[in-house]
Length: 204
Length: 204
Image 1 (tube, each protein chain N blue to C red):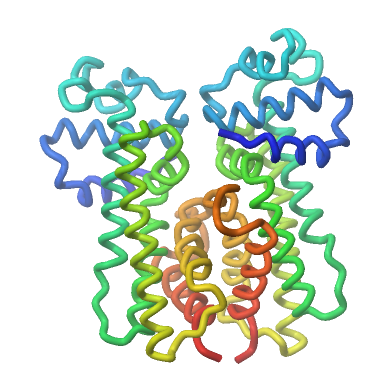
Image 2 (image 1 turned 135 degrees about the vertical axis):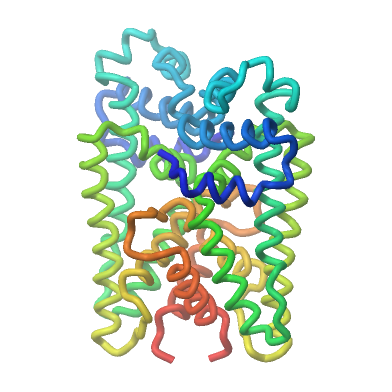
């Protein structure tokens, strides 16, 4: 179900999770949630995938929900970092480069992105609040990029908030449909999407 | 998790499923899959939600997978019907009206749409092939609408297949983020999306 390629990347991208055993468990949990869904996965399944004993899970995580929360928090933090990582004084170029990176990221990390997006309802209210705050930051960042373009005269949009949400949504949904054996690479999807989003936003 | 409003609509929209008991079970299964995921749902859960005995499920369906297949097949058939239902001689108006209906449908039937989109991997190979054929028809229809606009000179697109996929993806992802207590109605989302898609496609 999940490609090894993504998990190799994941492993690199989640290097902040220490020690090693905690990171291996997080990756095993993301794989299991993606394959069977959060509710059908047990901590025993996760331990088996990570090659550890069921009791070892509880050394690093309080519960299965805690594992989901860590995946969701780290996933949202990474995606916020991808969004805010592009520095460009020109609002049009900045938008194009940001959309290209963000869409590409959702192709490369599709399995994690799906878990993060589709299992929000399984988070505890406290954890959900933390993730909701990260989601607000992501939305606010995209909206402020659109606003900047509108102020500069480069963009004209019918509904600032709704349009910003649509830009975000278009990129996120790459995680649902992207297949590594398809005809486009993540880079090609990124550049197509940058083009399409500029068409959506540009002043005619 | 799921709103009664959607299920009232569903009930109307799935009136072809007979007898009554078979329809009730299908709706109960869609609710259960949306709440807990396919793998964590048992036929016992579905029967309980439908107010029937576990054995009654097997009068109408061969297995839990058969229920998922029926939901997926009917969901894809309805969505193809929504797409092809708009008749308009003008390719621009036809695209605008189709996108408005399709995006609106994904807001209204978000729970079913999520099950249909996110649980494809749980279908048997035979059932997956049937659904994949419907998905090809949906993609082909959107692509032919874009092509028609290109032929008429109204649309200019960078990558016909990739752009058509992006139009479809934008509308489908409404099912993920739409909340009935949000600021926009399904109709308002439909008309915003029609506008955004025309901007993406129109010849500058």
